[in-house]
Length: 281
Ligand SMILES: Nc1ncnc2c1ncn2[C@@H]1O[C@H](COP(=O)(O)OP(=O)(O)OP(=O)(O)O)[C@@H](O)[C@H]1O
Image (tube, rainbow, N blue to C red; front, top):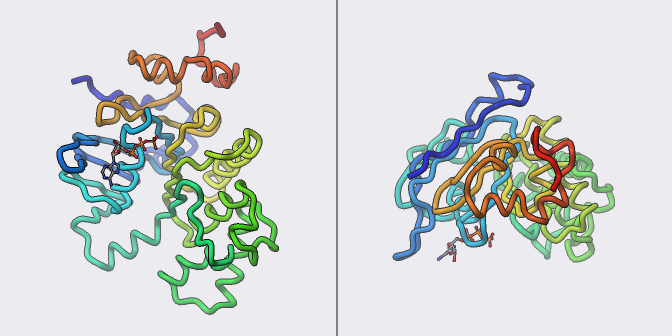
């Protein structure tokens, strides 16, 4: 079995000790359904302040991994430690405290259609905090501003919003409790290229200003090339390779090569993202 490649941190570190602090550590994780094994002894670390992009062919288990990390699916074996807490051995108080430090943006936004945007954003606040309505209203407007939505979006229902606005509203809800770590499942799917680029820029800005760590499942090569600090590829029931874009280009695997060097990839690779020595073919 090949070793998983480790990340060679060649980028200048902003605050190096912070950057290398592990906030999510997955060790020997095995997940399956009946006789079907989806993840087999998977290992992965995510570091504070980074945007990690997850890719992999359809059906490799990207969603299963994210859902298992979020305790929405059971694991067969292995350990998952988030922000220093192993949910499996944590007590109730530690679990609740951990839940408040995580934000999730599910695919397609997943807003409650019967609630306004403001009420959607306030759901996690109602669940975990005991705040007066007036303060929750103020906080909801702050979150809207953070994600670039106008104040009048607050009283709209999801059906009254465009696809891009739904994503932003869902991101505002994911940020409701000021999380340290956010999970984004295909955040730019369904957006046009400009909307997707704007959303990528927003994620990068929030990471920079709030110090977020971002775990992003994506098929979007533009996102991988423009905002992800590190990439992990799922394949063969494990993390096949992780590292920088340069590591992806150098990794000898047919799927990785065709994904990162194929026609679609060539159309988004720019001089800025192309590793040194690579010339456009
Ligand atoms: N609840 C479940 N019960 C049984 N099998 C499941 C369940 N959830 C996922 N699977 C299977 O696990 C495998 C991985 O699915 P998953 O949705 O994680 O893939 P993915 O990498 O996210 O794919 P895509 O990129 O197409 O979204 C698939 O074969 C899927 O059918």
